[in-house]
Image 1 (cartoon, rainbow, N blue to C red):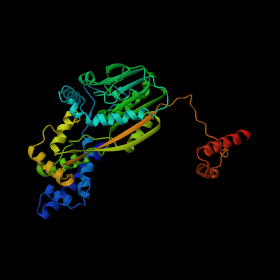
Image 2: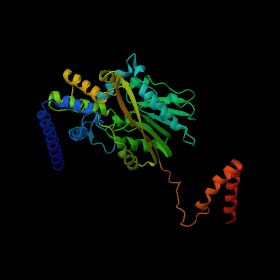
Image 3: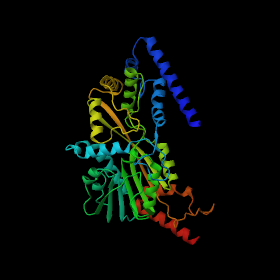
Image 4: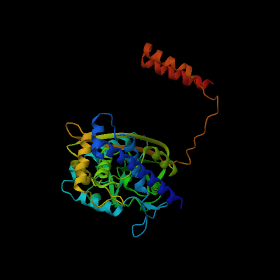
Length: 402
């Protein structure tokens, strides 16, 4: 009953906003999306045109989640905590199968190749022995082929699309086993068996993300590490707002054409709840240029990143697409084309080891005073690196005497 009241309040708020903006547009004697173009061309618009349009666009993910379905039927999620489905996993499987079988699939790998390379560099920063790893949702091997410098003895490569997994490139000099794994089901791997789990731009299509992370935590050994990248909430904000404005003007309402993404403020809480510690989370933005909006849509389909929401609209009218393309160009376009922003969230989490207990030092037990640190710079300037080494050795000797 309480959920129904929340839905009614949100819908009422949404209708109030749209009515207010529509009345303002009629008073000015121009259409809604035309007035958006005029305001956007003035240079004072960033992402959305004004407060009213901002409120409309912010309600998009919320309205989308109000219509999510429970997990029933043969594709029911068997992980702990599964309750609702936001994404149609069967449709996403078909999209990935079609993309993998495309003869020109390599043309659309540029984004995942770049993010996969950046993620693989972070593995080199881990200064510990890694013997066995898992590439979860490996795609075409965008990360695996770049980890040849890591001293792994065996790597499991997994994807829930058999065709995508078959096309995945394996790293040289590392034993590999390919296995089909659905991220929404229990992993066919033993508990405490892996030193490393990596995932590149894959987790944003998982309905039960907490359940998937708990499975990752289960298969990791104590003091094992989890590295992942996923799209953040500001991904494709230009396309999202353009489609919203165009659909409101041409059809009198809008649907969710861009899937909801995880916000960075929620990632840390989610990892902590799933048992990970010593978290490192950072964000990067990659902007890709396109001639028009239609080339962007074509590339998203080639990447298998097109919409797979449960309640997605099956058809988008031609007039709406043309209007969205015009709005995109006016609001965000440049002389050479349009930009598309991809926000990438990188995360690192460790499975705690009960044997490694950190005991807090007693207050006042420090042996080195911070007021002596200024001497270090003076010694380096006067005596170079030898003076710094001498200073550190003197500190160690003083500590031993005490």
